[in-house]
Image 1 (tube, rainbow, N blue to C red):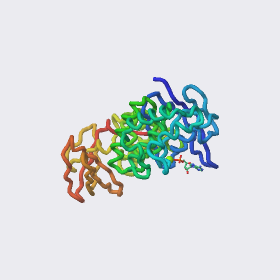
Image 2 (image 1 turned 180 degrees about the vertical axis):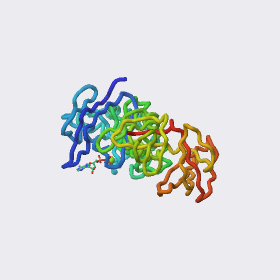
Image 3 (image 1 turned 45 degrees about the vertical axis):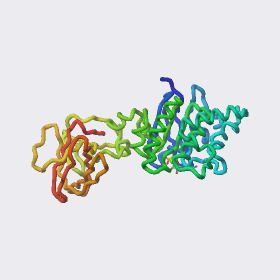
Image 4 (image 1 turned 60 degrees about the horizontal axis):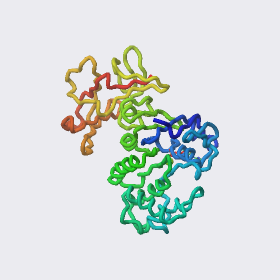
Length: 358
Ligand code: ADP
Ligand code: MG
């Protein structure tokens, strides 16, 4: 697969703040890439540098094999779907979509029938047929999202940047739009770079997932690898599905304020910040006196409460020092645990399901 965009050593500062602190990345052609990071990690800044709205102080940006740091945004052949849609409120759906084609600086399309054909094709693709003459003030949030996307796609860019595109939609609509975005991208064959603060969205969408932490790429891999093998404590934390324990390995155990875990066949990662991680759904709940195998770790804890979320139950336990440990039971593989409030249990996991950072 060839590369559509690559960045090397890109730095962008605002005063004393390193918003982008040496970014290296490369995006493959014809793929869905998600960019995950907490608020303030530099996601929007990174998109703005790629689009050309910001000039980096250092580093290189190459697009389709050409250096573009000094190329203005409208000459980059990169589409941008903004967080708040940024539609023209006084124009209809069709006119909003046609606007960019008719008014672009390079190659504006002046033949009305060509514009009409292109706009009609895109309206079909994004599922807005029948709404062409509607004012954009009189359509739903999901439909506005489609107009914003159509307006970008109609110019046939080689790369589309989407900044938290589903942030303004309610949860139901978000799930539907995710499926739609994947379908639309596949039909156009262009690369989408989709920025999100939601780990579930990032993992569900991305053929490749980039994790941004304080202006640096903390990990770039396929969704499975990110989910199963986050390579640092920070990445594991963003995923929101790992119990993380501080401490350090010594003498065949990982020891910290929450307990001592015997070490065996864990996955090991070299990391500046040490830690021990076990995924919520890798932890089992047993009676306190049930036997524990040699390759298992057992941690006594007090049951606090359950939270049901359709296909899974999340159970919360507390350690003696007050620390909360979470267990997720997928109802497709096990019955719901029925723990007694305030009773003590053994939380048990296999050593080879744990991740150790040291
Ligand atoms: P994200 O999109 O991940 O929430 P941003 O890229 O918007 O993060 O911001 C990264 C950091 O840069 C934040 O600390 C933000 O306050 C700062 N920042 C962004 N834009 C500007 C600006 N124009 N001037 C000064 N600081 C900025
Ligand atoms: Mg942002």
